[in-house]
Image 1: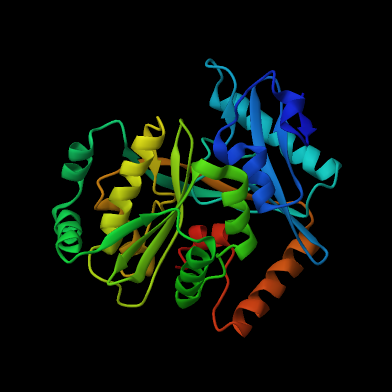
Image 2: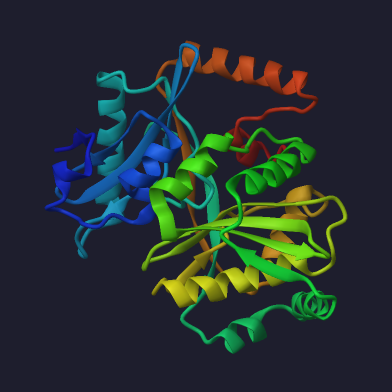
Length: 328
């Protein structure tokens, strides 16, 4: 049987501490309305994003297994019950695609689902072994940045970080950048487990990335760069961020956060995938899904988002529909 919990203390006897992206400190930085679906076997954290009359549920972590001998079929049963509770208790109008690093082993029966994955870098290797594992072009670019005097700074200002990420996302025609308050609250709530890092050339910020980590995993959540940023800044910044995580945690994995399984060769996503693949990470495959609970409000929400995107000079396609149709 599943219950909906609104505080970690309600189920701390089952698991403590929670992974960082399932923790209350993280959830509250994303939304004032959050919780966890909890059974004796599984935990699944969520936030509710409220816009006008709409409530969409977003998962911030894949299903957390509480026992070693659980099956994927048991997880599917848990997800099916989660959907029924969401409907019965009117928790949301629809369940949107989970955050990009979230890869589920399975999906609810009454869902629309698509293949999804993420890339992982093994941080148990030595710094030298990690660098040697990168593609030659990445290593060459990284070394050029060092030679050209690019410097790396950690724990840079959240506002600087947000502004560059927002500019980058806007340039790409996306609506995916969180508000500034998220960046500010992440630092306040997560402290030493929140890293905002930047690469500078001649005192000018070239590229930034945000990393959240604990002793189980590190996640590169957002990144941004100026137009025509200095060559190698991105590669050097990522390598130094990995070294920072190694020094300040026991995390065995650095997650590059998201991978489309089937990508058109001439799409912009193909270039993103290729860039990530040059770090020679391991691809983890699974699923992403969405669930329509209130069809009318779901349809109306998508229409309004499409109109808003058009006003911003871009287009919006539901992420699961995009994955299924190849419309990218």
